[in-house]
Length: 347
Image (cartoon, rainbow, N blue to C red; front, side):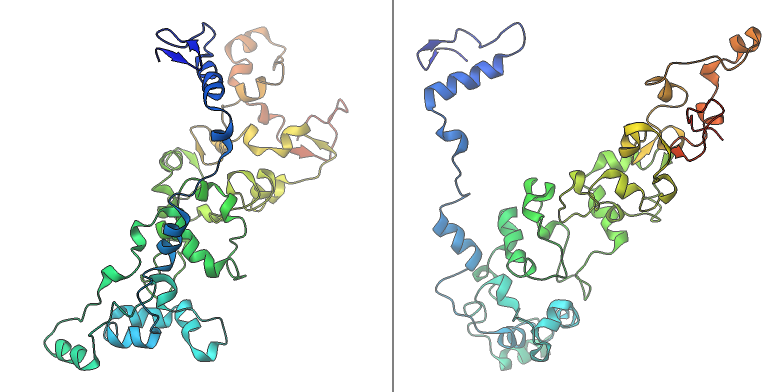
């Protein structure tokens, strides 16, 4: 950056030996432009355009689901799948549920089916052709920004107790511009929800680091489809860090590892509350998902001690070739005191 900013000559570059150049730039810009730009919130597009983006063509009218499906999709597999889905069940008058129809997502459809009659559909079907709607008059769902795509779904699903979307707006996926469309395809078939096996592929295509960790020697068997990402994480948002299903990591881990939960008379101090202090939760090159192999993991906090009174044995074997858990097997906690009376997590 050269020239003057806010009356200050910057020279060739704003830089300090201690690496605080970025902070200096920010302070200078704040002085020159004021602080308003830092806290001002603006929509992606002007509000009127954003409303049109979600509502659709104002020169079109709503014609109803029966008209849409009979005009275009009467002979289409989409209708069969949709009728068998949970959304299709809501279209039934017998359901007693709030009305959900094609136009709830796609916008008013009068322009899309203009000129399409049952006779035209029958004629083209006899000729082996499928009558196509004028799709360009619908909302262009795939080109909507991710927040707008999700907002279309939330119009209904934030009021539906079946889906836990109360924390979606504050979740990591919403902040990362991941939309409902990235994981769900409501026209894929009767089951609109992603199955557990499908969720592994959905998650790992965006989380390559975790995919790599699941291939390490010690790992949770996610790639073997014996364990699933959604067993620990709620992709729709939670109040916990990392989208964990429980409030803490320990509470999440002990859903399966109940033997480590405690409480114990002799606990492993405050480390017992954070499993990630010792374990790499997705995978590790060390046994039991340990971040560092024994005894070096333990020696990060504990001073070493001799394991033999024989100097020759100590030199040839020594603490560096001995696992602490060979003696201190109850490493998470125990109710039995050691010989010394200090706990010690011994057998």
